[in-house]
Image (cartoon, rainbow, N blue to C red):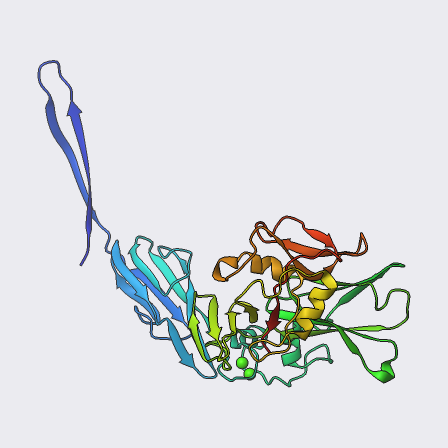
Length: 377
Ligand SMILES: [Ca+2]
Ligand SMILES: [Ca+2]
């Protein structure tokens, strides 16, 4: 079918008595050209199909779509949108363009795909393998830096094809402390180890620093003494799908929280977004000074676990924004964190529950509240 468009040229006579309409010329044109839409897609079964379609006429309405998810060995791909030329919008982020009117003689559409999941269960997301290697890669394959395997490069956030890629650290030393720095990547946790003699191995001095922090200040180890630091990077623990397997019963409280009740009545909350577990009761022991708070958390046996800890400043600040899901939160009070101030000496950071983003710190012998948590292994 061809569509017509016509041009009508007329003369409008304007007289003092009456108007005289006299049409002097009529031209009509037919655009009988073929309008072409070319579709490209590495995966799936698009509509219109892959290839050049030259049978459209001017102002044809066309809707383009493709599968949302496609399995194609070795990966599973999700459609992440398209790029277009001519009458197709330049880009989109869905698997359906909606109705497009073809008014350009040539248009093109390329569907975009991105691997999802870890279909080969090798610990490396398939998008990462695809983006860096174009295909499946063995986790033990050596990277271009000659030092790390592909899996190690993924965990540390290195470009496996960069010969100079390395997990880089910085070190600043003053008479009172040593400041370690490193390059972080989201979804990772970092631990700091210390040794005075490499023959004796390393001791763990700070565990599981979230990726949102990229420094550690040592005020005891390393200050004024010779030794070696080691920084370890690991993947953040994955939030559990269900409740705590040790719990007698559990319920989903929100998209973020799971509440677990144990046979003896102990109650915990799992934060699915961080992989942390908290006491549901946010005031288990009243007020304590900082040293007693640390000892209390260290010694605590609750819900079958003995690895409870005093949260650091970042962890407790985030937790304070979630206090409405818990019971017994001392909302107008401050809670201890494990994070000491560099100066003044003898102080540690606390978090003011009413407003966790106000800077808050106390002399370590001040009794304030305590809220233990643990990292789910
Ligand atoms: Ca994989
Ligand atoms: Ca692989």
